[in-house]
Image 1 (cartoon, each protein chain N blue to C red):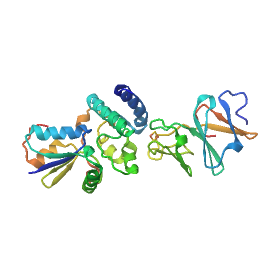
Image 2: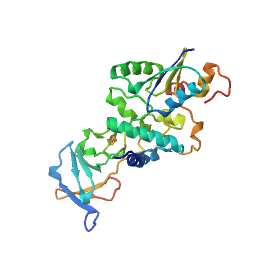
Image 3: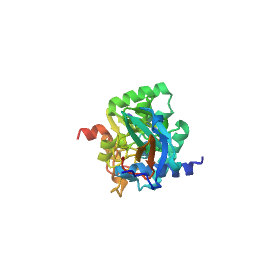
Image 4: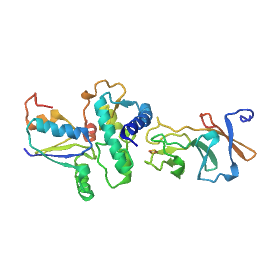
Length: 111
Length: 113
Length: 87
Ligand code: FES
């Protein structure tokens, strides 16, 4: 399958997942395009569209928590940042994703 | 009251005696892909399609009331259709009706009967 | 100060992080986790989990300080760069 049509398909599938969670695709189209490119490559390699910004391990249980969209498994963390780790998704009210930071969970928990 | 009479959205799918306890039965009323599951004597009818990327849940595993997708392990409560890790996401449930040992499904999505 | 980072070849924020250090002429070493053999990945992940409790990239080490995520303000602060560092 060609990459462009797979990207479109992933967008369509993931939109349905993130919408009820209060998220949308980032308005940063260039970033979205790049990340979906990477996911298509990861999917071709592993059969699964993993997050391009989190590391795979040998443990299936852990890997399943970073399959895109991984919001359900990192809800507290992502809600605090108003974006997911890789930035593919942001809270629906976000208009300027550049203002959002990557903050590790340890810092969020620590206040 | 019998909801099935004269209502075209109700479709016969399987005989009750063919439903095994704690197993997942795939039926295709009018081309829809629906799972009939009997658990603790109760029947549940849920969509076969995973809310994540659409994998068939029929190939997944059932433990108690939890059905796990074979593709990326998303887990659902078959009593409500809810995805266990984010209850805002759910798979459609279907009403069913048992009459003379025959099970009918209402192919219009809705709350469990 | 020695700068070292764990990155992924697929992650845009890791690229931005590398670019930040390049643009500010700060030499650094890095390991692209996803391009390393499995046994090495395992060791790296173990370290990362100790540091941040997660497998999220990038992880940037500047001297003794560890910064998880793309955060040019923090990098500048730790490096003692003046405001106006190229992000
Ligand atoms: S398609 Fe079911 S968990 Fe991904």
